[in-house]
Length: 121
Image (cartoon, rainbow, N blue to C red; front, side):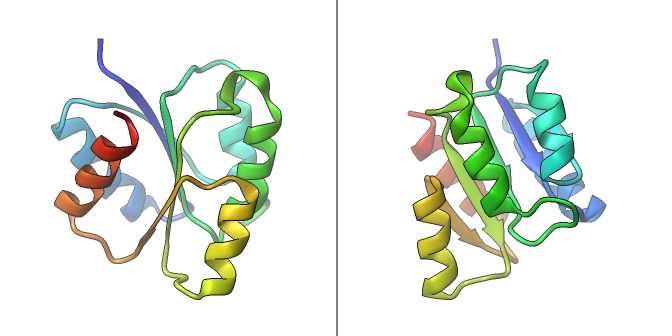
């Protein structure tokens, strides 16, 4: 049974690249367009990891992490921020909200898979 990862990004191109990379490595992928869409889909899906952008319409990645951490079934799910933001202030905000790791865009597929494998151990 493959592990299920939710990717959350308002860019269809980024979601496609993530899905292609993760599915090629054997993971099942659920895509969401922003934090609101992700929370709605999480009501019906159990996941083993969440990868989210920071800046998105309706609900950003930080708020999404806070909301996910409030739900008992997802409280300990690893969450990776995948964003163009690389300031220490933003990283601290992400970590404070409950992010497990941080990858700065653009990313290389092998970099993403290395982090995913490390976090999912």
